[in-house]
Image 1: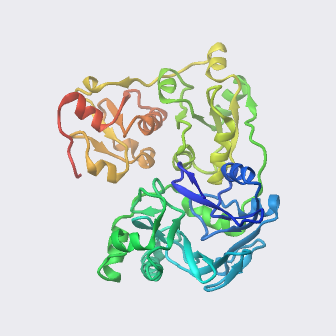
Image 2: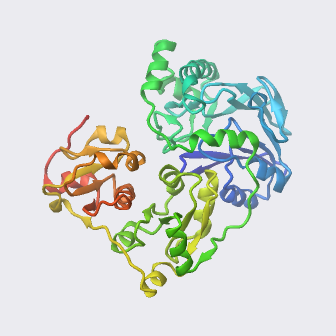
Image 3: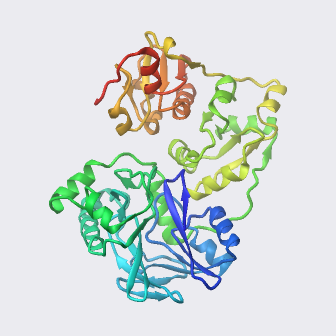
Length: 446
């Protein structure tokens, strides 16, 4: 069964081996959903297989080895520095009724392997990890910039190899809709070899050179922490436990902020807009919280959290642990109510409607592909992840920040406010809302 992490855009898998044991494939460090699924079925995880050295999350395989006694299965070519069963192309694992067979499929990473699941001699499905995805393939620029084309060519050969499997073989990829590892991003989670052979444009490329061009042309930006998690996964992430945020008094909170600790406010956008700790960064708690935390805040930068009482501290911690972010010092005890009661200063950023745009400069902070598909005429475009580095190039006139809804826009506005801009507002909605309200058309392209 697939266990989808909507924030990362990934699927882990739990396979019932019909004898009280289970196989986990590409499980992240946040094992909460997997544990619930296993407990409901009375399963103990006997095997934890990783298709590759993940760049977008820390592996949960070591955690499963420690808690369930699972045997870790991974490619010998990965040179992992922790106990695991090293697999090379063609190696098979007897799962007791089913067989797991490793297929060398380099491309997304140099050591990538896929796992075929066999019932006797029949291949039921293949865990393709970051090789063949639904309608696409995973990007090849996460190992090192110098190896991007080399790995793209390896990805071509790996996909061609997988395409030789029978039509009815199920395709179970790790990366899917919303994953920054997918290039281009897909929308579905699972497929079959026959469907992919018929519909996947990368599989239908005229030749290797055409495949490489199509793949490389589709690459967008990705969070900077992607370049360090692979090595942590090679060494083996530390085991973790507990899910409580230490409370920090108002006075200590203010002292930490003055010392350079970054305040991250995870409350919903309207709450942040109405009042927040000055110079705090808005990153609302939602499935993609950790991705934007890791994109906007340096991975080694200590952080203190502001949240509402109904927001789960465990969700904050597990999301951040998943990306190797362990610099959260604590949370504001009593939240904004305690801060205001202590007479501390607050700041606000207005939410505005289409009528308020006027002569302001619209700053669209969506990803490149989103902006190109349609934006407010005359809008300036800077992806949210690049806003901090380009503040000085923005015009002196008032700015209204826009994204698809308003979460990313408020994140950008809070960064601009930290940089000293006092003339910033956030559009309540996205370009489609502006077009519907004004009756005007969106521009496409640059």
